Length: 352
Image (tube, rainbow, N blue to C red; front, side, top):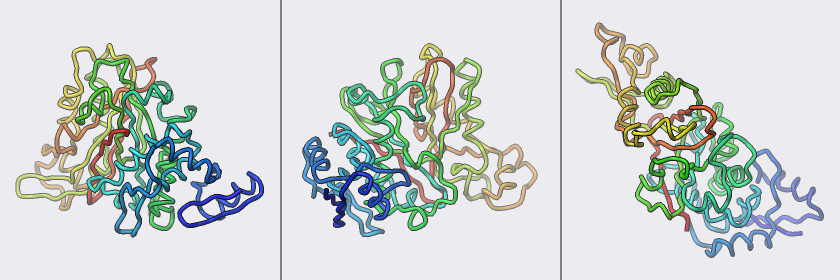
């Protein structure tokens, strides 16, 4: 049996030996991978309908180009089915977009993961999970698409832990971080429609971020968003990490926050996603005194700083709102963005 990834040729006599050889070559994320044989990779390329040598994007700082063929090999290793390939390609194109600034979150000590949020008809076609145990195990498409993104980062973009990936702690989402939005059980506009695509298109949005922090609040929109604001305003997140103080105001570096809302759509009758953002935005703040005590902004606490508040999110549009998860309880998850000094913008790409 023979396989190739980049320019490396590996040979083996049986499947177990193949898996061990992949470990020796450094192709894994620490878990066993499916050996990327020529035949299997060819199936993925056929499904994509795109040539192996097509360049999707580059990481110029590492002198790396990412091709369709490299993505196919990593999707095979992640355990994907061929029909998942267009979604993995869209996620890869999104994270290679210049505005995503991949070099930042993929090498930062902050340990961000790359969350892929899938929308559109492809969610139903691939039977992706958009309901219970949203961020957990159990669904092949979610698990392997998210894992494929991580393997592409490691094998094609050189984001190898301890080398260019300098995470101090990391988080479990760096193994696999992929969800789908539950568009059919809500009156809200899907994320990809809000970001300029049509409802009948499929799309992937990538977002460099920390692990989700879930919370369960009283079953009113105002109570849910009060809890979300409290979590989003925590000291130590990227949104409260750095800034500067002028004569009359303080600013912190631009960031985004993701809000994944579960429960019943009935709770949000009369509310749009825009209403959620407008309500939540002014609540995501900290006093200047808190930020100075935490050394998030320079200077010592001065009289009046306890009453001076700093908004931690520049605008309501910087809040990504997604409806997904189980309907048994009114729960939400707050996901702080990455971005200590240079930011990363969420990017949406259609599934071709």
